[in-house]
Image 1 (cartoon, rainbow, N blue to C red):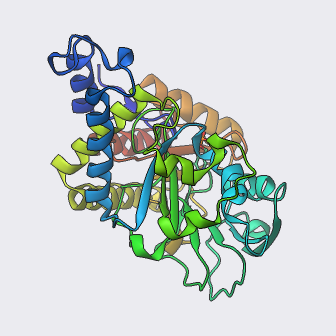
Image 2 (tube, rainbow, N blue to C red):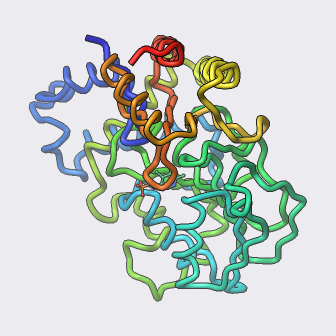
Length: 354
Ligand SMILES: *Cc1c(COP(=O)(O)O)cnc(C)c1O
């Protein structure tokens, strides 16, 4: 039975990655141990950690002037670590508010620093990404690159004179990014990079001088950078899974994956736009290629569609609880057959099948 999983996260993984993890589960590379059981300070685990970092650096063209950190706590812990580490010069931080995840990042930042929202599309149901130009004199400007709940995305980074920080949790490695435009990027792994438990932070070394010594050791980017994310026990198995996902992306080719993401998203948007039943309200140029919300406009019809889809093995299509309707998440591991199957089921539902 082929089930297509449209979950927004934790999300579908590439089948070859799961098979590889299965084949190595009991005995990793003839070490006589599983990855679960290894000391994080053993040479064999360090080789896993290093391979993951090197692969990420190759895929994202990350120069040596940035550190790559493997942390815990999800993207959500970054909402609170970020201001504590980096809002230490002027004590002011600027945000562009593009949805539910921006809102949460703003709320946490306010506990530590003064926050200014430069622009927000909240009054318009977050249907677009506010356009610049923006001027800022704050310690950094924070943006949410791909808005997982609302289905919007930036296409290019805003130009600003201050460090630019982006939450890329739901789009990392779905497309090439101009790394040098950013001073920090962060992402929870469970959407496009692996399984829950790991958070990747990519931060410019020059910013590490800002980190104060008045916050707890685990919260400090400079300590994690210096200790190569081995200050304490990292989420070892999640890190291993991310190594496998990164290897899969390298084998497949990021350009190939990015092109597939563009074409799959286009197929689904075309089906929605041509339908008389389903709608997506996001402005065309800001539409996400990873998370595609749609709705019939009727709660009971949406519920009926979700049932119909699930009965045809298309699962986890319910929209975020704050938004309702449907949401198809088309992360890197979603095969094109899954998108075709979804479009087919949408047609059948629209023809009246239940
Ligand atoms: C999922 C998500 C988060 C929250 O991630 P956790 O790992 O659950 O903390 C934050 N930001 C964005 C854009 C997300 O998609």
